[in-house]
Length: 279
Length: 280
Image 1: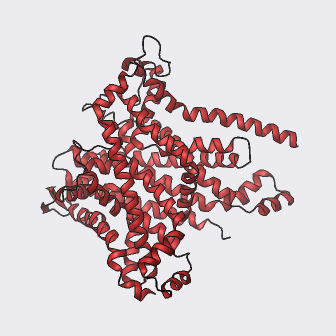
Image 2 (image 1 turned 60 degrees about the vertical axis):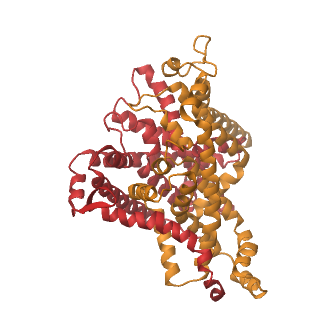
Image 3 (image 1 turned 180 degrees about the horizontal axis):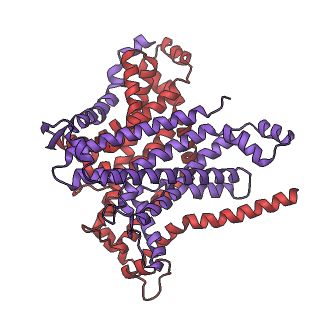
């Protein structure tokens, strides 16, 4: 019985190993093709570069020149980091307040936050982008506040879910000892909320870093691109794509994500699970 | 306690609330109102009643996209969840390499839709070129291309949630079933599946709403080609807004209908699967 089970396990391991190779093969393919000349990418994408088809770093050079990729990377990083920080700070404070001060008004706000989670972006995309235009917020600093407003629903919902699990006596004790509400929040509540902060940060980072449509509509894209916008920019007016430059830029777009993932893997998977269970 | 806290409303709530009202509530209400108007800018509008909603159905594009999206949602919800659950079952048996497998399967999920779409384009076109076709050969090619792409992206995410659900089942329950002589298939049907129903609720909800809202992957992989035969709802709405002058009101009416569809489907599904969950 045990021998059979062990054999079974080995077979499964072998099967999953093959499946893993299939899973990563598209990314490896992009990497290999980024060193091939344009014409050979569409014709023989599965072939390794030969002496004839090898392009050296040419694709990377044209890609960088066409998309302004390094600046786009900087924009993406700036927008993501500061949006997530502001979302964490503001929504955790907001969630604590509306879970502790309970009246008709805060209940109404909470309901609206939850409601916003099921509204697809297309519903507000036109009016939102015109509004941002009118207020001249088409720059990376302005879009951070748009993300705060649009990301508030999920974040407040998750924080509020956790605040409810904190025994109120802890906070009351701090207040009786003379802590102001602000001190109580930062010294007592926020440290307890740390795991939720990680979850919210991961979910929001995944969304904002990869978001295409909102920054595309709001930012002045002649001046400010993000990575997804830069990639999409390589598709020319009539659908023609420079596949060489595209492959090189895809490599640039994917590598930081994979490195980040491998470093923070444990947090990311746990965060996603915690987020899903709460939702 | 809440009396002391109450005065701090401007510090704690106002920043979030102001951003939320400005970037969600106002655009939402304006969007609702504008769906009954003809306009090119938000300040220059004329009320036209329901005529935008009539025009939504005047070209077949919206209905076609709706059917396309619905079919896509059904197929991808089924494939993603069945495959993710199967892999989760096999990866909770404690075989060697489980952690590495889990890491690899989850990875595509972190890559953004646009990037993913172009990676998919390279691979799928690379396969199809052997048959002298491309991914934009017909609507059906785009359909299955998107299904494969979404499976690749989302199986890992759902698998992780299912694994957590399966690991939460108390070991005594499975053991008791074994002692009572249940076959593995019976244990699966009568214990494992009912016990992971909360995970099923979440995963089906996520895959269903993601499928309906899909935009980036659609834009990158096919951009609707050939002639909008692979355009899903979100892309159809986008094209109505930004591709046709004078159709902004129709685009907004489509967006309102889109919101209603997504909300109703999401809530109905939550209601149905929640009922199947067992109390612990």
